[in-house]
Amino acid sequence: MMGWEKLADTVLSNDRVTLRRVRIGDVEEFSRIVYEPETWEYFVTRIATPEDLDGFVEAAVKDSLNGTRIVYAIVDNATGRIVGSSAYGNLAKADRRVEIGWSWVCSAARRTGINRSAKLALLDHAFGELECERVEFKTDVLNTGARRGLAGIGATEEGVLRSFNYMPGGRRRDVIYYSILRDEWPTVRSERFSGLTRG
Image 1: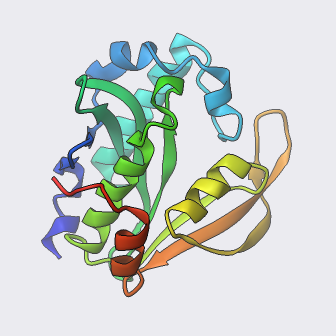
Image 2 (image 1 turned 60 degrees about the vertical axis):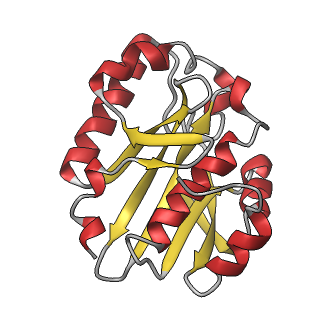
Image 3 (image 1 turned 60 degrees about the horizontal axis):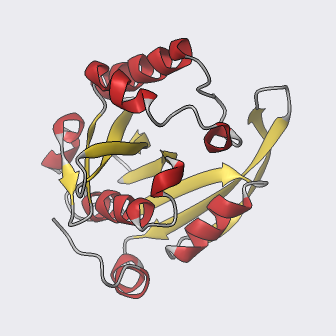
C-alpha cells in the first residue's frame, strides 16, 4: 500500500478534472470563486474575507503536509482553472478507511459533471491505489443537496450522529454518514459513473 506514503504528492485526474494538492500560490485563483455565500451555508467554516481565504489555504497546506487531511484543488481540464476543492480526511491506513469531504465547487461548475468527476477520481484512487475497504462521507442532515448527491453516486446512507458539532452562529449540527464499500465499488462505478473515464 505504497499509495498512502505518497498520498500528499499524488495528482489525480480523469478526462474532466485534475486534483492536485492546494498550494499557497493558489490564493489568487481561489479568490475568483470563493466569495459565494451559498457555497458555505452548511460548512463548519466559511470564507467571506481575504483573511478567511488565507486561513483556508494555510490550513490546507499544513494539513496536507502533516497528513491530517490531503486537500486538493479541483482543476477543470477544459480551462485549466481551479473550480473548487475536496479532500481526503480521517485517514486510517491500518483499517484501510478514508473519508472524502470538505468538498465544494463554485456556482459556475455546479450541475456540470465537475463534482461527479472529482468524486470519481478520489474514489478510483481510494479503492485502487490505497486499497481501501471503506470510503465514507458525512454531511449536515439539513443539506438536502449534498444528501441527494451522495445517494446519486451510490453511497449508502448509514445513520445520523446527533449534536455532532457547532456551526457558525451556534447551531449544533446533526451529521449523516454515508459509505461505499470495496465490494460495492465495481457495481457502483459502472451504474453511477458511466460515461466518465479514468485518467
